[in-house]
Image (cartoon, rainbow, N blue to C red; front, side):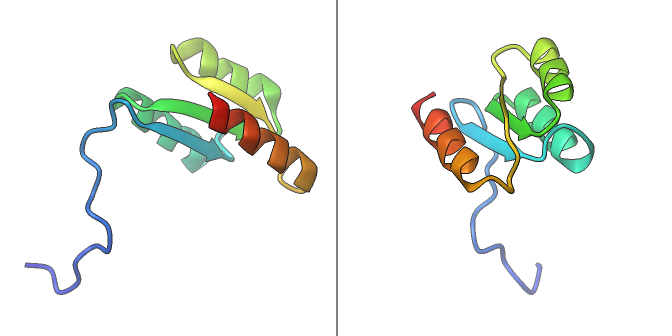
Length: 86
């Protein structure tokens, strides 16, 4: 038995859940997007590189891409509004 329990119970069923991943064009973000998509989540990926995001969307049916530079606060607000309505 672990000494410390997770604060939140692990999610085991991702079907019907939506996930927005920022920084998902490469590395851990991309790997996480792939894993969650494979588990049935509706995935929205964001990053600055539109080409890499489109490659993900093209190979993961139902996924969406929102090009985003997190240093632009107005763009973050607009992206969040868009993702929320999807």
